[in-house]
Length: 262
Image (cartoon, rainbow, N blue to C red):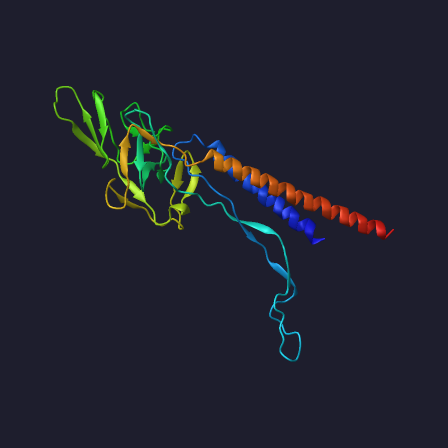
Protein backbone atom coordinates (compact mmCIF):
# COMPACT_ATOMS: atom_id res chain seq x y z
CA UNK A 1 0.00 0.00 0.00
CA UNK A 2 1.46 3.35 -1.10
CA UNK A 3 0.06 5.15 1.94
CA UNK A 4 2.60 3.40 4.18
CA UNK A 5 5.53 4.65 2.13
CA UNK A 6 4.07 8.15 1.73
CA UNK A 7 3.38 8.53 5.44
CA UNK A 8 6.86 7.25 6.30
CA UNK A 9 8.36 9.96 4.08
CA UNK A 10 6.16 12.48 5.86
CA UNK A 11 7.49 11.34 9.23
CA UNK A 12 11.08 11.63 8.00
CA UNK A 13 10.38 15.15 6.72
CA UNK A 14 8.97 16.28 10.05
CA UNK A 15 11.89 14.67 11.86
CA UNK A 16 14.22 16.91 9.81
CA UNK A 17 11.96 19.87 10.57
CA UNK A 18 12.27 19.22 14.32
CA UNK A 19 16.07 18.89 14.02
CA UNK A 20 16.30 22.30 12.33
CA UNK A 21 14.04 23.91 14.93
CA UNK A 22 16.00 22.33 17.79
CA UNK A 23 19.25 23.76 16.39
CA UNK A 24 17.66 27.20 16.23
CA UNK A 25 16.51 26.95 19.85
CA UNK A 26 19.89 25.63 20.99
CA UNK A 27 21.60 28.70 19.49
CA UNK A 28 19.24 31.32 20.92
CA UNK A 29 22.15 32.80 22.90
CA UNK A 30 24.80 32.45 20.18
CA UNK A 31 26.27 35.77 19.03
CA UNK A 32 25.31 36.62 15.44
CA UNK A 33 23.55 33.27 14.85
CA UNK A 34 21.22 33.13 11.85
CA UNK A 35 18.27 30.77 12.10
CA UNK A 36 17.30 28.18 9.49
CA UNK A 37 14.02 26.81 8.25
CA UNK A 38 13.23 23.50 6.57
CA UNK A 39 11.67 23.74 3.09
CA UNK A 40 9.97 20.77 1.44
CA UNK A 41 8.76 19.74 -2.03
CA UNK A 42 6.24 17.15 -3.17
CA UNK A 43 7.53 14.08 -5.00
CA UNK A 44 6.62 12.78 -8.47
CA UNK A 45 2.97 11.92 -9.10
CA UNK A 46 1.48 8.75 -10.55
CA UNK A 47 -1.24 9.44 -13.12
CA UNK A 48 -4.18 7.08 -12.78
CA UNK A 49 -6.04 9.20 -15.34
CA UNK A 50 -4.00 11.89 -17.07
CA UNK A 51 -5.51 15.37 -17.05
CA UNK A 52 -6.19 16.73 -20.54
CA UNK A 53 -6.29 13.31 -22.17
CA UNK A 54 -8.98 12.55 -24.75
CA UNK A 55 -12.02 10.56 -23.66
CA UNK A 56 -13.83 10.19 -26.99
CA UNK A 57 -13.51 10.58 -30.74
CA UNK A 58 -15.59 13.75 -30.42
CA UNK A 59 -12.69 15.54 -28.74
CA UNK A 60 -13.85 15.58 -25.14
CA UNK A 61 -11.01 15.73 -22.64
CA UNK A 62 -10.49 14.87 -19.00
CA UNK A 63 -10.95 18.16 -17.06
CA UNK A 64 -9.24 17.13 -13.81
CA UNK A 65 -7.69 13.67 -13.97
CA UNK A 66 -6.58 11.38 -11.19
CA UNK A 67 -3.11 11.81 -9.66
CA UNK A 68 -1.67 10.13 -6.58
CA UNK A 69 1.29 11.81 -4.89
CA UNK A 70 4.43 9.96 -3.90
CA UNK A 71 5.19 11.86 -0.70
CA UNK A 72 7.53 14.65 0.32
CA UNK A 73 11.25 15.43 0.17
CA UNK A 74 13.53 18.03 1.77
CA UNK A 75 14.30 20.88 -0.65
CA UNK A 76 16.72 22.79 1.57
CA UNK A 77 17.38 24.40 4.93
CA UNK A 78 18.00 28.04 3.98
CA UNK A 79 19.29 30.54 6.52
CA UNK A 80 17.31 33.64 7.41
CA UNK A 81 19.93 36.40 7.35
CA UNK A 82 17.86 39.10 9.02
CA UNK A 83 19.38 41.45 11.61
CA UNK A 84 19.42 40.19 15.19
CA UNK A 85 18.83 42.44 18.19
CA UNK A 86 21.78 44.61 19.21
CA UNK A 87 22.59 44.21 22.92
CA UNK A 88 24.74 46.59 24.96
CA UNK A 89 27.72 44.96 26.70
CA UNK A 90 29.90 48.03 27.48
CA UNK A 91 32.98 45.91 26.64
CA UNK A 92 35.29 48.01 24.46
CA UNK A 93 36.30 45.12 22.19
CA UNK A 94 32.72 44.07 21.49
CA UNK A 95 31.59 45.36 18.10
CA UNK A 96 28.21 44.96 16.43
CA UNK A 97 27.33 45.46 12.77
CA UNK A 98 24.17 47.48 12.24
CA UNK A 99 23.17 46.75 8.66
CA UNK A 100 24.83 44.77 5.88
CA UNK A 101 28.24 43.10 6.06
CA UNK A 102 30.43 40.52 7.77
CA UNK A 103 33.69 40.72 9.68
CA UNK A 104 36.59 38.96 7.93
CA UNK A 105 38.45 36.36 9.99
CA UNK A 106 41.75 34.65 9.08
CA UNK A 107 41.32 30.93 9.72
CA UNK A 108 44.29 28.69 10.71
CA UNK A 109 44.37 27.12 7.23
CA UNK A 110 44.82 30.53 5.61
CA UNK A 111 41.29 30.89 4.27
CA UNK A 112 38.99 33.75 5.18
CA UNK A 113 35.85 33.17 7.22
CA UNK A 114 33.01 35.63 7.64
CA UNK A 115 31.05 36.31 10.80
CA UNK A 116 28.54 38.63 12.44
CA UNK A 117 30.00 37.82 15.87
CA UNK A 118 32.02 40.83 16.99
CA UNK A 119 33.06 39.54 20.43
CA UNK A 120 36.77 40.21 19.99
CA UNK A 121 39.72 39.88 22.34
CA UNK A 122 43.46 40.66 22.39
CA UNK A 123 46.05 37.87 22.41
CA UNK A 124 49.38 37.98 24.28
CA UNK A 125 50.92 40.11 21.50
CA UNK A 126 48.08 42.63 21.54
CA UNK A 127 46.62 41.43 18.21
CA UNK A 128 42.85 41.62 17.75
CA UNK A 129 41.46 38.05 17.62
CA UNK A 130 38.21 36.12 17.95
CA UNK A 131 37.33 34.14 21.06
CA UNK A 132 38.95 31.12 19.38
CA UNK A 133 42.20 33.03 18.80
CA UNK A 134 41.76 33.54 15.04
CA UNK A 135 43.06 36.85 13.68
CA UNK A 136 40.65 39.57 12.68
CA UNK A 137 41.57 40.56 9.14
CA UNK A 138 43.61 43.76 9.06
CA UNK A 139 46.33 42.66 11.50
CA UNK A 140 45.31 45.20 14.14
CA UNK A 141 47.85 45.31 16.97
CA UNK A 142 47.16 47.33 20.11
CA UNK A 143 50.21 48.78 21.91
CA UNK A 144 50.91 47.24 25.31
CA UNK A 145 50.69 50.62 27.04
CA UNK A 146 47.39 51.70 25.45
CA UNK A 147 44.95 53.06 27.99
CA UNK A 148 41.83 53.00 25.81
CA UNK A 149 40.61 51.64 22.48
CA UNK A 150 38.05 53.35 20.27
CA UNK A 151 36.32 51.82 17.24
CA UNK A 152 34.37 54.29 15.13
CA UNK A 153 31.19 53.67 13.14
CA UNK A 154 33.31 53.63 9.98
CA UNK A 155 35.70 51.00 11.37
CA UNK A 156 38.71 53.14 12.33
CA UNK A 157 40.52 51.65 15.34
CA UNK A 158 42.22 54.26 17.52
CA UNK A 159 44.09 54.03 20.84
CA UNK A 160 45.22 56.44 23.50
CA UNK A 161 48.72 56.00 24.95
CA UNK A 162 50.40 57.78 27.88
CA UNK A 163 52.20 61.01 27.01
CA UNK A 164 50.01 61.79 23.99
CA UNK A 165 47.00 64.06 24.07
CA UNK A 166 45.52 62.87 20.80
CA UNK A 167 44.51 59.31 19.92
CA UNK A 168 46.29 57.55 17.09
CA UNK A 169 44.79 55.24 14.47
CA UNK A 170 46.30 51.76 14.45
CA UNK A 171 44.07 49.96 11.95
CA UNK A 172 40.88 49.81 9.94
CA UNK A 173 38.09 47.20 10.17
CA UNK A 174 36.41 46.39 6.87
CA UNK A 175 33.22 44.54 6.03
CA UNK A 176 32.45 42.02 3.30
CA UNK A 177 29.15 41.78 1.44
CA UNK A 178 27.77 39.02 -0.78
CA UNK A 179 25.25 39.04 -3.60
CA UNK A 180 23.55 35.98 -2.10
CA UNK A 181 24.36 35.88 1.60
CA UNK A 182 22.00 32.93 2.09
CA UNK A 183 24.43 30.96 -0.10
CA UNK A 184 27.22 31.15 2.50
CA UNK A 185 28.33 27.85 4.03
CA UNK A 186 28.22 27.61 7.82
CA UNK A 187 31.27 25.78 9.24
CA UNK A 188 30.83 26.31 12.98
CA UNK A 189 32.62 28.72 15.34
CA UNK A 190 30.13 31.39 14.16
CA UNK A 191 31.87 31.43 10.77
CA UNK A 192 30.63 31.27 7.19
CA UNK A 193 32.62 30.48 4.05
CA UNK A 194 32.27 31.82 0.51
CA UNK A 195 30.66 29.43 -2.00
CA UNK A 196 29.77 29.50 -5.69
CA UNK A 197 26.19 30.25 -4.62
CA UNK A 198 27.13 33.24 -2.45
CA UNK A 199 29.36 34.91 -5.02
CA UNK A 200 32.67 36.61 -4.33
CA UNK A 201 32.94 39.01 -1.37
CA UNK A 202 32.73 42.75 -1.95
CA UNK A 203 34.91 44.47 0.65
CA UNK A 204 34.67 48.08 1.79
CA UNK A 205 34.78 50.26 4.91
CA UNK A 206 31.78 50.28 7.25
CA UNK A 207 29.34 53.14 6.75
CA UNK A 208 30.06 53.13 3.00
CA UNK A 209 27.09 53.03 0.66
CA UNK A 210 25.37 49.64 1.00
CA UNK A 211 27.35 48.66 4.10
CA UNK A 212 26.35 48.75 7.76
CA UNK A 213 28.06 50.75 10.46
CA UNK A 214 29.76 49.55 13.62
CA UNK A 215 28.68 49.98 17.23
CA UNK A 216 31.41 49.61 19.88
CA UNK A 217 30.31 48.07 23.16
CA UNK A 218 27.42 46.16 21.57
CA UNK A 219 26.90 42.58 20.33
CA UNK A 220 24.39 41.27 17.79
CA UNK A 221 22.32 38.47 19.27
CA UNK A 222 20.73 35.55 17.40
CA UNK A 223 17.71 36.34 15.21
CA UNK A 224 15.76 33.47 16.82
CA UNK A 225 12.27 34.17 18.16
CA UNK A 226 11.46 31.69 20.98
CA UNK A 227 7.69 32.04 20.48
CA UNK A 228 7.93 31.36 16.73
CA UNK A 229 10.24 28.38 17.19
CA UNK A 230 8.02 26.80 19.85
CA UNK A 231 4.88 27.22 17.74
CA UNK A 232 6.70 25.71 14.75
CA UNK A 233 7.87 22.85 16.96
CA UNK A 234 4.31 22.09 18.06
CA UNK A 235 3.09 22.17 14.44
CA UNK A 236 5.91 19.81 13.36
CA UNK A 237 5.12 17.44 16.21
CA UNK A 238 1.42 17.33 15.28
CA UNK A 239 2.28 16.72 11.62
CA UNK A 240 4.56 13.86 12.67
CA UNK A 241 1.76 12.36 14.81
CA UNK A 242 -0.74 12.57 11.93
CA UNK A 243 1.67 10.81 9.58
CA UNK A 244 2.23 8.16 12.24
CA UNK A 245 -1.55 7.77 12.47
CA UNK A 246 -1.69 7.19 8.70
CA UNK A 247 0.91 4.41 9.07
CA UNK A 248 -1.20 2.84 11.83
CA UNK A 249 -4.41 3.11 9.79
CA UNK A 250 -2.73 1.63 6.70
CA UNK A 251 -1.48 -1.26 8.80
CA UNK A 252 -4.98 -1.90 10.11
CA UNK A 253 -6.38 -1.87 6.56
CA UNK A 254 -3.71 -4.32 5.40
CA UNK A 255 -4.44 -6.51 8.41
CA UNK A 256 -8.16 -6.52 7.57
CA UNK A 257 -7.43 -7.41 3.95
CA UNK A 258 -5.11 -10.22 5.00
CA UNK A 259 -7.82 -11.53 7.36
CA UNK A 260 -10.36 -11.69 4.54
CA UNK A 261 -8.01 -13.85 2.47
CA UNK A 262 -7.75 -16.57 5.13
